[in-house]
Image 1 (tube, one colour):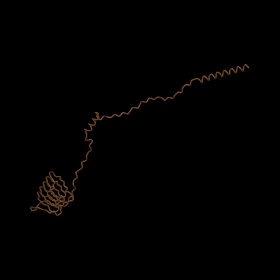
Image 2 (cartoon, rainbow, N blue to C red; image 1 turned 90 degrees about the vertical axis):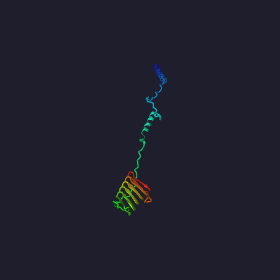
Image 3 (cartoon, one colour; image 1 turned 90 degrees about the horizontal axis):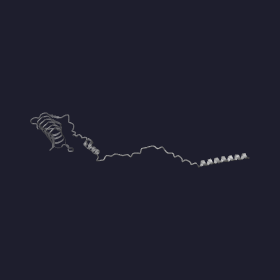
Image 4 (cartoon, rainbow, N blue to C red; image 1 turned 60 degrees about the horizontal axis):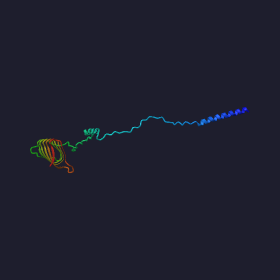
Length: 203
């Protein structure tokens, strides 16, 4: 009986000790939870974008304008000069009547629709009828002609007066050609003067 009581006392003590430890554990303050903090990284703050503009009255702007104005020809586009369009003459016939010299009583010559070339110098001659091609090669000549399609003057110091003509080419120097009207009424007279001090005039 005494042993049972002792055993019961030990159980009570053990229970009391266990209960007291449980109370102490339950009353212990709980530590606050650790907050996860991200590692701090040192980043440089973004810099604002700054655009530098030249003042219109600044020294650099004025100097650039001066440099541009110093060379205005650099901005000028080249202009192509159009070549002078020369009139197209009918082809010269291969066969021509050649007058090398004049008889004393020869003052007129009828072309009769043939091409004629005058070589005689100091000629004073009148060509009648129609001459498709009349070439004056002799110098110091005074020529009159009725109707000529193409008139060419190679002899210097020559004067030609023609009533109707279509084409006039004066290569000789110091020569003059007078004409009255167009042989072909639907087209204007086409003339070309390359001899110095030579002219073509309409009467």
